[in-house]
Length: 217
Image (cartoon, rainbow, N blue to C red; front, top):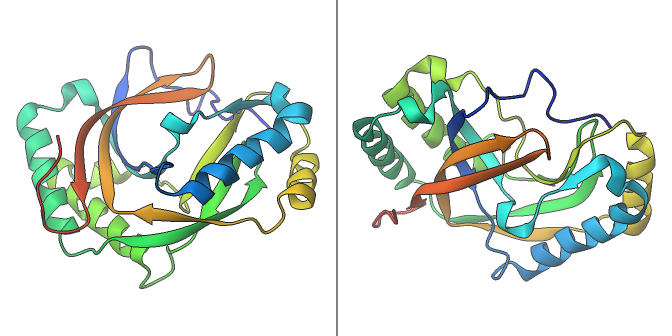
């Protein structure tokens, strides 16, 4: 395990960035809530010294960031255009469920992998709509950040540790545990990074359903 927020990932002081997230509803997806809690309880005693846990209210899966443009430089007109483009694009993408898990240890985090991003899969279709909306409003340069495969981060690495030891513990105690993640909407969020405690917090700009309907701002 290595520190997740390295110099390469550290944002300049005061900078906030616009992202598009999936934010799980843990009051609805009870099994997911329990899986996250179980994962934390397994790794915390032995590896709490090298992980910054993500509290329930800040769990998220990143679809895309608007790269290269601080959120403070995005005008109200651009935000409205982005929300409109997302609403139009996501109107053709039906709500769906994915499977999250089992938990795994990477070199910089403990996370739950999320399925559905295979060709023709629902996550791929949703991601394509989000990518198209960002490119249409902010240009292709705003797509520079590759979010990678979909996942929910349970804890960010903060210190050196053997990821293999963490993975072995997870495999023994949370082996093949999976849970449903319901995906009904995307959240446009204005994100702040706290590098000192390896955390991300945000303010919601808009919530856009994966079907025709009103935007919840």
